[in-house]
Length: 74
Image 1: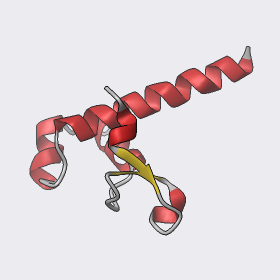
Image 2 (image 1 turned 180 degrees about the vertical axis):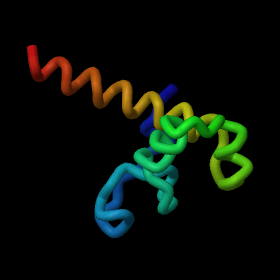
Image 3 (image 1 turned 45 degrees about the vertical axis):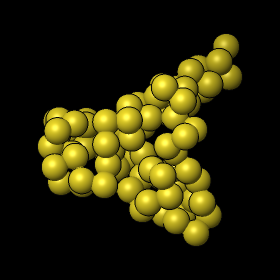
Image 4 (image 1 turned 60 degrees about the vertical axis):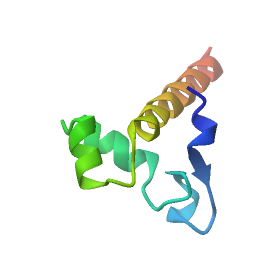
């Protein structure tokens, strides 16, 4: 999964937070919904502009960020 095809960062949207395909839905929003127990199906039902690849991209983005932070701490 190449999250860079789905995750965008624009200073004018959500204060420059990583968002999905230029929308105002942030990676943080999706990760929070998943952490709160929402399923991918429920998220897509509530936000039909999202798809499976968008949600996977959020997880991949978060994993990559975590990996990079961990590498800095070594």
